[in-house]
Image (cartoon, rainbow, N blue to C red; front, side):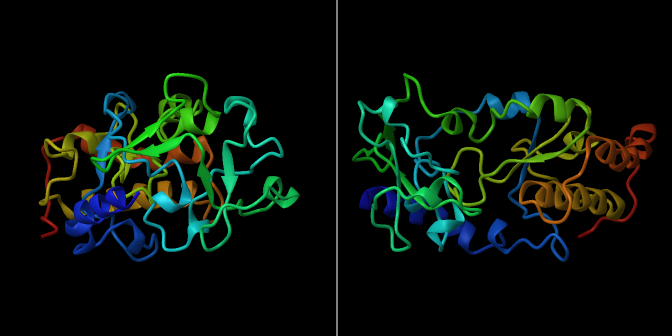
Amino acid sequence: MQLNRTLRKLRNAHDRETPEMFEYDPKTSGPPENVRYMTLTEAKSLECNLCGGCCGSAETDADDLRAYTFGPIGKRQWAHLNGGEPLIIPLTPSGKPRAWQSRDAEAKTPPPFQCAALSHAGDGTTRCALWQSRRPPQCDEFPINASHYPAELQAGAYLLLNTKYQRVCTWVDVLVCPDDSVVLGWRKADGTLRRRLSDDRWEYVSYVFSEAYCDLFEIGEVHTLREWRAIRQAEAQWRLTPSASTGARR
């Protein structure tokens, strides 16, 4: 485990010197510069790098273990997937395994957790003993395979992937865009935005990013698909004049 944590610190060194998602405030901040803008197909084509960040609270870069949870943990703890032994194990605030309690299935903020199927390799990556077999649905969905994503994107929503606490994850800081989004035409080859966008374009990107962030973390009321369609009406101006650029933001 120590090798994995050391690798994570080394790979995060550059990000720690620049603004990132931990410092983002939807009311006052623009999107972090390392955010990638991708279609769902592009995002699904990426390959998991086996960092293990989604496999346990202690594997993430959250200062508070409770910031990243598996979700509600049922009494049986998915033991049927682990030879009858508990698979998803709740942790104490200090990160020690503990016995299941009834509140683990009902708490508004589910407990931090560890997974019994996770192991650490000598190269700093991790392995899942259930990768090729049946896994809990949360594992199959994270972070890009939620069943509702295709319909929401088709309706015009922008979706921020829930990787805020997995700083080494392949899909860290990805905003999934509708296939017809004008933002996709403003990208560099690596999926991040070009440095010199016009002020109005940058303002629009900042707005859709903040709304997607608020939807993900349920800040205020989550947008309906009708509201997302209304938000996206602003894109019409750039479809009519795709080469227009007025005043670079920097």
